[in-house]
Image 1 (cartoon, rainbow, N blue to C red):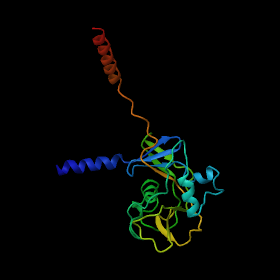
Image 2 (image 1 turned 90 degrees about the vertical axis):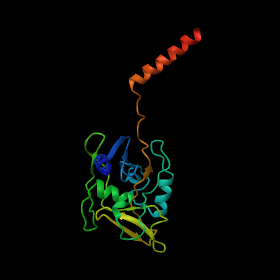
Image 3 (image 1 turned 90 degrees about the horizontal axis):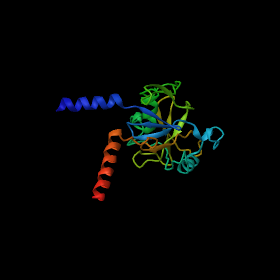
Image 4 (image 1 turned 60 degrees about the vertical axis):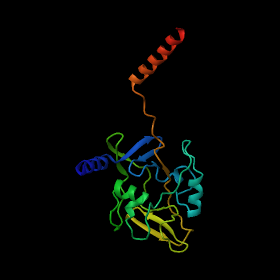
Length: 209
């Protein structure tokens, strides 16, 4: 039984990946969240001249964002990180940059963040758009122990979580949405339609009798 569980876990990890859902949506099946494919949509959309927003501006923009009919966007979560220096890759931004885009797994030096990721929907490399080697805001957290008047952010070129006491700082914003909002409905097999048609036909015959 234990061997079977291990095998199942290995199988899950082997298939965990990012999926391009089209229309600028990228689904992460490990965290069960959907990212915008454009990592600097605040600039692309014209909301900000360079994409940098203060924490207050970032929250206001994300909370009111409507992208292709989808609302309820939010800033990325620290996901259970309880103090500074914990494993940054456990955060949503850390998981994206460290596990998917190749930022350092241990905070280190400045590197170029490769925008390529393995796209499971086409079984080959694909690109995140407008990935920058800079800092992205985190959402507020009830678990992470911020120092007084401090705000957390993730530096992509070092794989590190930082904190600042300046809400006036202007950093980048990468909206995220819970769940797989870009998934297409799973089509029913053709046999199901034949079966349903047969039921309808039997119902009509029974009614005539």
